[in-house]
Length: 413
Ligand SMILES: NC(=O)c1ccc[n+]([C@@H]2O[C@H](COP(=O)([O-])OP(=O)(O)OC[C@H]3O[C@@H](n4cnc5c(N)ncnc54)[C@H](OP(=O)(O)O)[C@@H]3O)[C@@H](O)[C@H]2O)c1
Image (cartoon, rainbow, N blue to C red):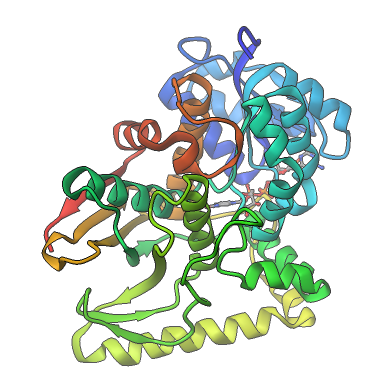
C-alpha cells in the first residue's frame, strides 16, 4: 500500500455529510501539506460545485483533485481504490450503494471507513469480506460517526482503565445519553427507511436487527445481553429514569463485536446497554414514559409502508440536512459507567462530550479523523471487517480529543 498517489479519498463529497467531512479536512489539514487527499463521487458537476464552496473557505481547495466513480461501476471503484491508502465514504444508503466499494477496497488492499448504521448490511459485509480482509491486512471499518464511535471508544476507554488500575475488565458498561441537540439529514432518513423496508420484506434481515449479537462472528459464544429496552425504568446507578435510546440497537451490537474481535478481552459474560437518561425529579417518570411511548409509536408507524412513504415525502430529502447554526450550536453529552466485577467503590465513570451536533458537525470530524488515522498512524491492529476501537483504539482516542472536539473525561462516582 506504500507510495500510493493519495493518503485518502472522500467518496460522496457532493453529499450533505461528504461536504462537511471535506470542510473539516480542509480546515484541519489544508491541501498538499501533510495530507494528500482528493474528492470523489459520481457527478463531476456536483463535485465541482462542492469544490467551489470549499474554495470560499480556503482558496487552496481549488487544487483538490476530483475523481469519478459510480457505485454501479465496479471498474471505476477499483481504479479509485488502487490510487489511495484509505477511502472514506459517505455514499449512502450503504445497503443500496456501498457493497461494490467494500469489495473493491478488499481487492485492492485499501483501508476503508464509513458512517453506516445499517446493521443488516454490515452483517453482509462481514460475511462476504472479513476473512479476505484479514488475510490481506486491510482494515474495513464501519460506523465511524456518532454511531458508534462514542459507544465503542467509551467502552474501550473504561475497559482499558479498569484493567490498568485493577487488573480486571469491567463486568458491565452502561451508556446514558444525558443531553444532545441536533437534527437529521435526508441521507440518514433514506438509510433508515431503506433498512426498515428490507426488514419488512425479509425475515433474515429482521433476525439480524433483533439479535443483540447480530454483528458477532457467526460461531462466537454469545453473552447474556437480551433485547433492547422498550419501557422506562428507574436506574439507581444514575439516580434517574432511563428510556430507549434511538441509536442503541446499532451501537450495542458494535461494542459486542469489539469484545468478540478482541477474543473477549472484556469477558465472555460482559454486558453492555444504552439508554437515554431523564433527570427532572418527580417529573422524571412521566417524561421517560412519554419518550418511551413516542419512540414505540414512531417505530410502529415506520413499520407500515404507506406511513414510511409519507415520512419520506415530508422529512428532509437526500442532500438536505441541519443548518450551519444548528450544527454549530449543537452538542452531545454522554455518561458511561464501567462496573467493577465485585467492588462498587472501584466502578469508573466517564463523560464524553462533543462540541457540535452529534449526527453531522461532530460526525464529520469523527469520520475525517478516522480516515486520517487509518491513513497515517502506525496501528497495531490486523485486517478484517473491524470496529473503530479494534482498528484504531488509542490512536483515534488521541486524535478525537486533540483535533475533533470530542472529549473523554473521568468523573467522580
Ligand atoms: N453514523 C452516523 O452517525 C451518521 C451520521 C450522518 C449520516 N450518516 C449516513 O451517511 C450517509 C450519507 O448521508 P448524507 O446525509 O450525506 O446523504 P446525501 O446527502 O444523500 O449524500 C449521499 C451521497 O451519495 C452519492 N451517491 C448516491 N448514489 C451514488 C452512486 N450511484 N454512485 C456514487 N455516489 C452516489 C450522492 O451523490 P450525488 O451528489 O451525485 O447525488 C451523495 O454524494 C447516509 O447513509 C447516512 O445514514 C450516518
